[in-house]
Amino acid sequence: MIISFEGLDGCGKSTQIDKTLNILQSSGKKVKVLREPGGNTVSEKIRGLLLDLDNNSMKPETEMLLYIASRAQLVREDISRLLEDGCVVILDRFIDSTTAYQGYGRGLDLETIRVLNLFATENGKYIPDITFFLDIETEKSLSRVTSRGEEINRMESEDIDFFDRVRKGFLEISRRDPERFSVIDASGTVEEVFGRISDVLRKRDLL
Image (cartoon, rainbow, N blue to C red):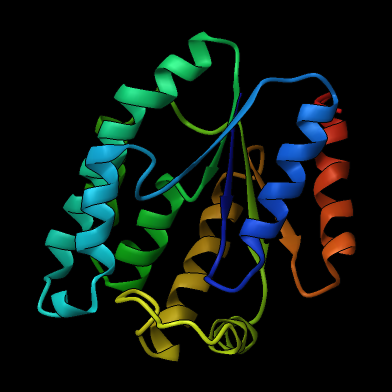
């Protein structure tokens, strides 16, 4: 079982992933959380390239291919092995982020991204069973990122129009794949949001 969490930065993914990890472990399941890009030595090095503010000259096509490369490594080195071991794999971002950020956000060809995502996931063998899109208004997500008081990375430094396109992209992706996607209103309290996620997990007999 693969569960992915998607959304704009500041939507609360990390908090909800931690809570999902804990509740699934409490129910007796083996669970592993991996982040994208990243998750292993090679993919973490790619992550560094993608998020470094010094790399602002990076072209959208290069950016997309680096995300695909990181994903291909993560699938083949970690995800496939963990699933064989009977783990539930929770992913902090996965294929839909590339479609939303590089496709809808950067304006790259959606069909090209679809084909490359299939390649990275071994012809679609490792597609998430459940994807939670934590949806909040763009302005609120940016406000949360700013309020952290941390240095922003290269992707976070984009303007609000970019993130508006990304959000609309996620919503469009979810409309096209309603069986996999659960759009979660992430504007409430942590417990309210987690309650909505828990309801989906119960319906899928994971709790």
